[in-house]
Length: 88
Image 1 (cartoon, rainbow, N blue to C red):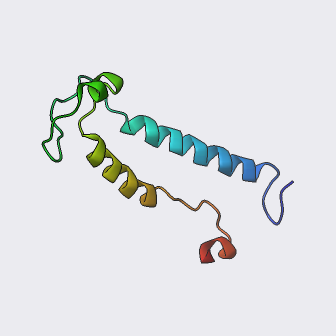
Image 2 (tube, rainbow, N blue to C red):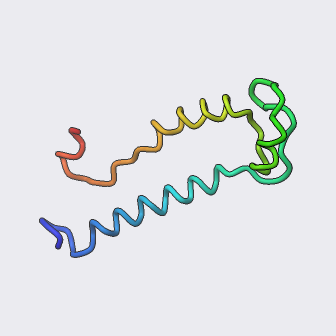
């Protein structure tokens, strides 16, 4: 059930687009190829278990956690155009 000037199903379309964008961002951030032996950020050795578990890994666990926490804040995107949603 849509409200206002939107058509039926518009809210679900917004939800679907948000999920699709999140999946695309996650797939794009996956490393590919052979894992590095040293972290590209701090230079520390990447443990063999991490290299086996995550092919294409370029960072150690600590540096990856830092990158992930900084990416979380920028991934929020408000698709709603209402004034109320902009004020939250």
